[in-house]
Image 1 (cartoon, rainbow, N blue to C red):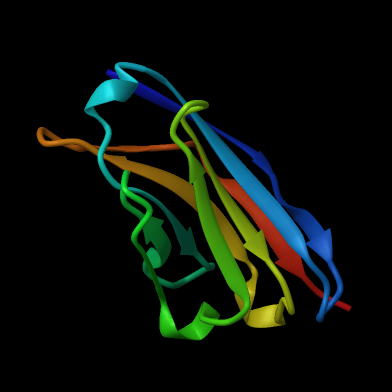
Image 2 (cartoon, rainbow, N blue to C red):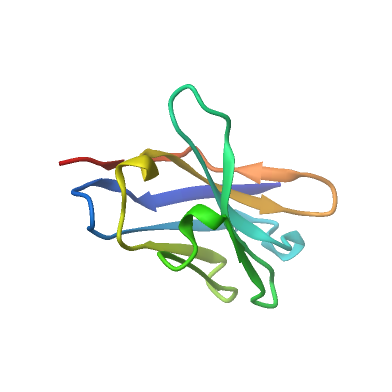
Length: 115
């Protein structure tokens, strides 16, 4: 089993920055890719960014150039730095960890971008 706990998030004005992090515990050695997804009200959950254990990344087109995902394997933690935030980035952000058997989700953290 793997447990994921997210930190960070909050409210910011358009153009501002926020960061979120996610710490994994439990059987962390089985985790391969980690990532961030988000879900806005009335919309489906969507991929924001993900990173492999080796550090390869991919991003949703909507966040490329503005968000940066990183990972500290020693700390079993994944980070998401969000810059130049837009109102459409407002959502609950969920941490995700993939293993061979299944994927795990964090509880979610709210990010609100509003003037």
